[in-house]
Length: 300
Image (cartoon, rainbow, N blue to C red; front, side, top):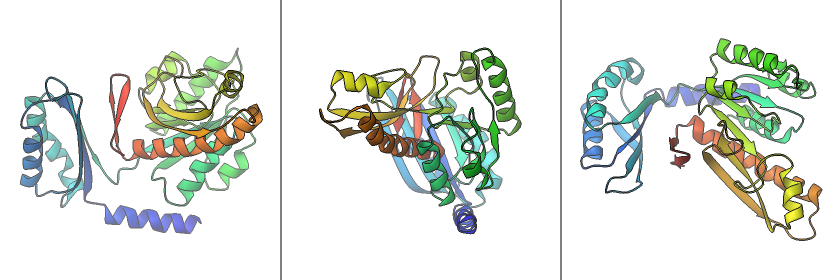
């Protein structure tokens, strides 16, 4: 399987070596798309995918995501950014140009629940999750063998009430040492401190085992059972200082009824959780998510 993944990754890197993505958010006004597409044409680029959205054509915010192929893109990126900055200033754009092959470096945090981690590892091993997994961090040892069998480093950092600050200092040091830019909380059942979150703004993706905003916090399946819900769900979102209230990337639900006890809800919920997290993470890795206030624009 390792050989298959490496071959698929090398094929991907070779096939898309000249592809890039341009993400834009700016006040909506006439001429944005014309200016951007004309610029890309002048650079010799061929647009292969384009998505746009406006919150309101009259005074709203305009969002644009473009994928394009351009010869010698890696060598031209810095100069292209310099030239595009002139257009961006004219339209008051917040923008980002990224190379398709510049894979994000990711760390996965996990606790006792293993289903979300295993889903991500399986998709990564199959070549479906295009990222560089730097390591896995856990406050338990039981997933070490499964992770290290794939050649991924595994760090056991226990978290106690008295030692939480020290544990986070170790975690932050590892993340910075390995230049991690995406952190995935794959059912990591710890609340991150404001100081930790501030180090990685909108780089931390969580899976919450509830269809937010319902049942925020701990034991949502038990809350759902007591409420007698007919739908349960899961939500993947960016982490902010407000517990389970960061910008939502993806959600899904399943129908249940009065016969479902808390353990039944958990069993169904695990399937939703792992699929929702995987989808949200892929969209993030592919630069398909633009954050706007406390919402997201997702060009899936």
